[in-house]
Length: 416
Image 1 (cartoon, rainbow, N blue to C red):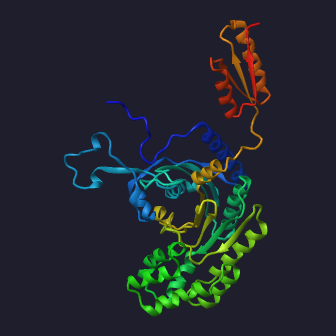
Image 2: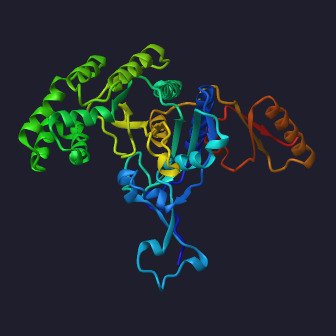
Image 3: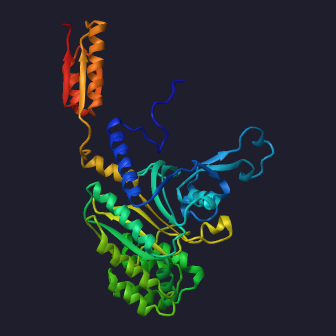
């Protein structure tokens, strides 16, 4: 039986043109984030299955690629349930591994700790435009900083990076899980119903206010509570005035300082930003991960038609490893979607090295080949990218291919 040439469903092979842009973006990410004081770390791609299934990853926990036990530990004949067969899984994000990493190494790490982590993650999701089952994630996190200085730095670092990649007029949508809960409590909903209500609210951009109302009614919630809840979204504005409205209207339901903190983040980012973007208070922003405890944010781009990054504060997660809560907040950019958009717009890497090619006639002597090797060595010393290749019969096609790959200087070498 012939071996299969195509990659596994949901995975993809990457062509040299894409890899060139990916490598450039990775380099720019590291350069930009390190300028903001972040340090690179790395965690294994395989995590303990207990950590991955700890009810913190939302729907992602349904999408884990699970790993069978190995060798003598794998006892198929006596296994009665999945736990008898599985002890690990491929990570579905970088936040759970980071929390384990920090819990294990906190005594030798600075506080606050500013982490930069890039790596592949895996989700058994339905593949679609810009979404694969294996994809690169790029996270920056600040651990041990309880103040909103952490959120401000994360947003400024991420938007500065996007500006360097020539993205403009995108929007940072921002909210706070404490505001979400206060709005639900103010409207009279029971606390045990919050998660279900937020799932419906999260569909606002797709089904509209009427659709949210219909779904809440179908779920059997009290009409008075639904009307009071939806009235909030008719009255509230998407700016600091909207945050102040929450502070006044939700008094008694909203923790002290939550609205002031959010207002400070918005005004500070608007004042200190380097890139061309808007920051907008969005009271309908939910984000699916149950581990978020405070501020949450997403990047929206019209040219993609959805989110290309997001994050938030997760002050309770590390405590699940150590027994002691640690302030934590992170921001992840959609690396794969960013690269896809750059490829679609024909993005050219700025100030990339000059590319030079030598095409060798088949009749060259060894001394003449050595002479070309010396010339190429001198070119590389000047910072050029140099390729040496034997001349093909269809020389025009060969040169056209080299030009397509960005080679601007093509020299043919014949026997003297």
